[in-house]
Amino acid sequence: MKLIVNEFGSYLSKKENRFVIKTKEKEDEYSADQVEQIIISSPSSISEGVVKLAIEKNIDIVYTSYSGRPFARIYPCTLGGTTLTRREQAKAYFDLRGIRLVKKILEAKLENQLFLIKRLSKTREGLFSKEIVSLEKHLKKLKVFSGELIDDCRQKLLGYEGYAASVYFSCLNKIVPFGNREPKAEDIFNTALNYGYGILYSEIERACILSGLDPYLGFLHMDRYGKPSMVLDLVEQFRPIIDRAIINLFVRKQVSDSDLEKIGEAILLTKDGRTKIIEEVMESLSFKVSFNNKKLTISAIILEQGREIARFLLGNSEDYKPFIWR
Image 1 (spheres, rainbow, N blue to C red):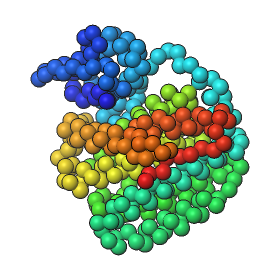
Image 2: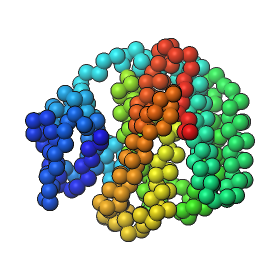
Image 3: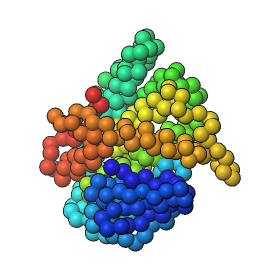
């Protein structure tokens, strides 16, 4: 269970083995044994007792902005077993492991985009037939692409990703007309999608930290101060999960322009808008699918993916197996 604090002025405190969220209207209690993460998405207060209990129970506390992106988190000062993993992560950038990881991640992203488009096409016969053929051909080209160093291949790989994204979002645009996919756009679809991705970033960052990976030491995305490039790499294969959640909200007409408000110069989601997106995304992340012959939630698979990369980097597995949506 993820405990989400989304009410302005909320106070989060501890009572024995329980977390207590107090607002002007009500007070709710949650057993610490049932909480795996605390997400604080609006200005709130938190007691020292909450932090101590969360650390004791290995519960992640993450602060997110109004756009949904994590900007701070609280976790134990000692994280064991990370030094060797991070050393190998740095070395892999300069050998075949780096290019292998990036290729697998991008192939999985295209596979998952195709899966979603095919799924959406079941009730819209023929609507995406040309796009599906195009993406399938594009995926085949990516699979036979070869290279040795990521720095020599990055632009080519980004080209594959960019073309696939343009075809993919043209399909989504036929279902929910939104113009262009633009991360900085302020229309309701792009804003909702950005917020959903923000929640996903938090999940991915958590997986990196718990797996011993450096969230800022990626392969495909260039290193830049303050940019969690490993998070941005690993997030790619899971984006279609969020896309589907946001599409569902629009198809059911549960989200509209009325869920936006202007605060200063910024256009942001209202509290109700954030709540609807959080609930839909969390439901998607808690949905169980088959992976490695097991039924796991998407959240559990995200954590397992972090560990899978760590095992590959450490030489404990021969290859990296990404998440393919089925």
